[in-house]
Length: 178
Image (cartoon, rainbow, N blue to C red; front, side, top):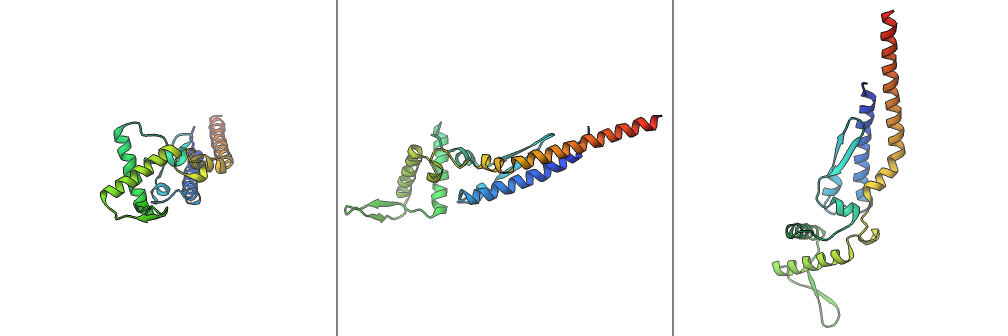
């Protein structure tokens, strides 16, 4: 069976789905560097589509954080935290005896100490407070739920048109043989 209507509907749906994911990342305020919102890649299959993200921390944004499993994984996580802190403009500080805080000079040692404390806090509490820390934003599920009815209707309609077109071709072929 030729599925040209289904393919067209899937192509349109995947574009809309990616746009909604990017918009939801901005709504959720999970776009510090902008890479996450721009990282969504899509693939249309024979009877559906897949949308993924090519940034390593996408799983953390969507599903929450987990501890590093290997030393290399821990180093990569610290590097991503360092980049995030730099983009956010975070600076290392220390507490004063009077109970206040004082920014310290930015050195490799002070940055390493700040990254360590951020990493420890993420391990203990998670990443995003407004999403319940370790739960993540659930961005993929949120977008899917917002568009799932439309996806069902569009795919069903396109598939129905393809079946009707195939039936017409069979009937015409049968009628021309008589």
